[in-house]
Amino acid sequence: MKILSFDASTAELHLSISEASKLVASENVRPDSDRKRYTASEIIPAIDSLLQGQNWQKTELDAIVVGIGPGSFTGVRVAVVTGRTLGQALSLPVLGVSIFDCYAKLMHEPVGILIDAGGNSCYVASYGLSEGHNNIDGLAELDQPKCVKLESLAQLFSSSDRWLVSPSLLEKVGSDTSVKMEPLPDLNNIAVLQSEIALHRLSLRELAGDGATRRARLLKEFPYQSIRPLYLRQASITLKSHVN
Image 1 (cartoon, rainbow, N blue to C red):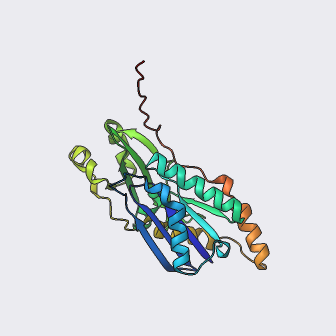
Image 2 (cartoon, rainbow, N blue to C red):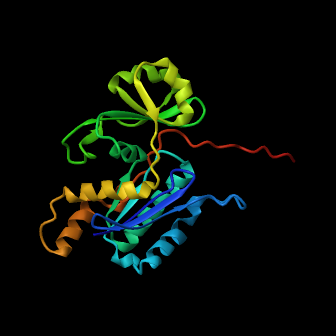
Image 3 (tube, rainbow, N blue to C red):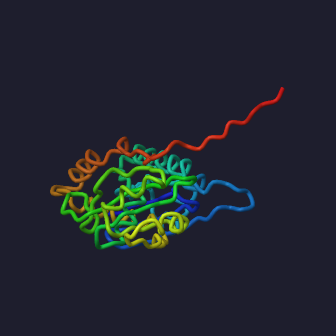
């Protein structure tokens, strides 16, 4: 199974292509400081370049994996639209993976995750042991991810005794609690982790039958229409005043 994965939820654009469980190629596209362009605008050119580097055609792909956030409002939106468009055009299953899931995959025990959302807010998710269908190395979400104010965090700390926290938040919340807190690990390339999580989810499905039958089942279970951005807060919009 050939999988294309990409994520634009952070300042960098992360991409990878894999075959079965083997990573074939990956790339991190960093912002262009001279022209201050969004890395999200480079998704299609970067995908084309990555595939061409391995002599792959888009028509050879078996699945697409998209980072659904939370993170950059523009980046997540562009990535999701791109994934949905490719899925529709190529008749491919599309899987969405959150950045929370990527952090959870690195852990082997129940964990809470705090990501700086800017201002006085943070994104929160918690994971516990599970044998469920969509678990991540034995972990699954305990509650729906949310965006909360920093002053409201104390009531959440009882859900996990270990928390991964954005470094920018450690000084703000680390001294107010006795639970174990540590910096979020470096994900290096988010798309690679997304691809591994997606492959695990696909491998749990019943894929008996010929190629056409398997493809039809995956398309039905992972339709491009089902992919939605994980928007946990409103977009930041600045209205400019016009002087006549």
